[in-house]
Length: 160
Image (cartoon, rainbow, N blue to C red; front, side, top):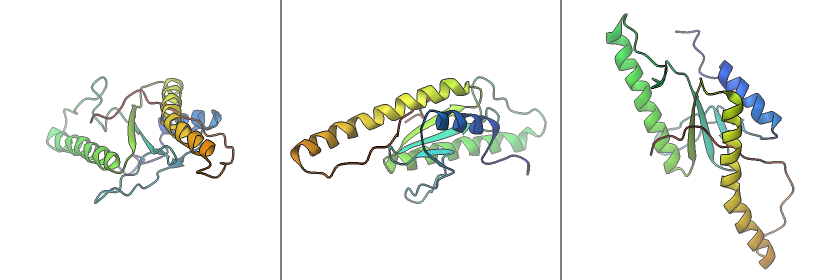
């Protein structure tokens, strides 16, 4: 199992490339400290506090494509269950730290995932933009520099 990558998988690289082409900037494999756990989302939008995981169908037991191997099932059953439990704990830790968690299956087309993430990020920025514009009008904050930060939404939100 040494050849199984923890980061920079094909689906993850394709998604990152599309997000970057859309002008979105992010951190890769960024450790988020949330209590006792420190999850490492595949893609992290730190300004919007959006954590994105690109989950493999086999390793994360996709309901559409995931299957439990017939050979050595006494090993694989608990292994895949631990993966699902770790995903749940990571989601909870990130939410407790104020992050929005988005999980994308590897079989979701990258274009669709990138478009969804962009919508999510724009929605996360909208309330901040309203607050900062009202603060600027009242003279409560200093002017912000312009940046090309955009946003993204995900095809699959992590369950609460």
